[in-house]
Image 1 (cartoon, rainbow, N blue to C red):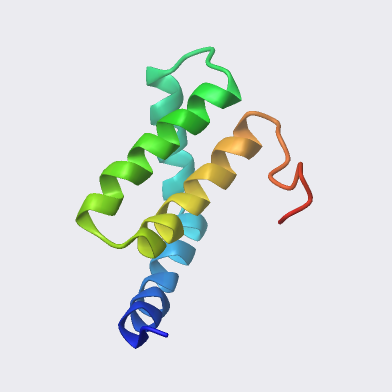
Image 2: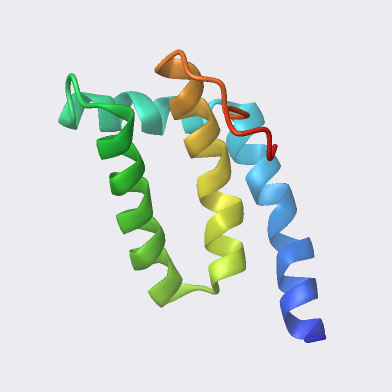
Length: 89
């Protein structure tokens, strides 16, 4: 168990909550939908994966998941999809 990773995740968890509750995730999703008009959910998921690849180069993968999760959930709600389609959430 790597304690540095655990403390990093615990420190970034409030940022993830702040992104979701402040409405920043909705603003980011609206801006991305402006660039990718009439795109399918698969294309939008690919864009989020590319952002995750880029963010993982600057920070750990766990933190990039915490930052991108509220954005992905907001995008799913905007597209009218449920995030728990496969039952794993």
